[in-house]
Image (cartoon, rainbow, N blue to C red; front, side, top):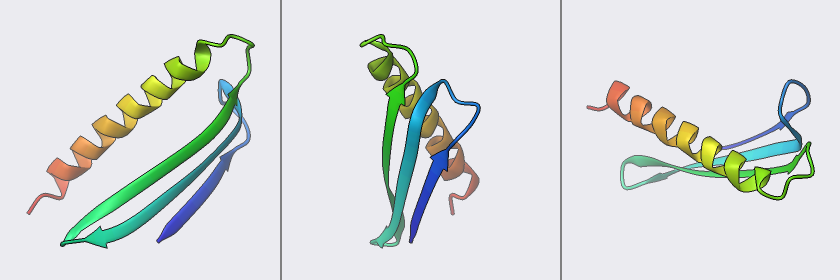
Length: 71
């Protein structure tokens, strides 16, 4: 299954697009998540900071989902 999205308003970044690819492997769901964006401010360090924040959010969400839907 494939899901793509564009964030057009309300984000601290611009040109934010995402692609989520779900597949089944050995009875579990695998998620490959790709995100592209440009920082609104010309700070070169902003990209890595946002990347880290997004990764942390995804990790926490994954942990919550795993606990909620664990057999």
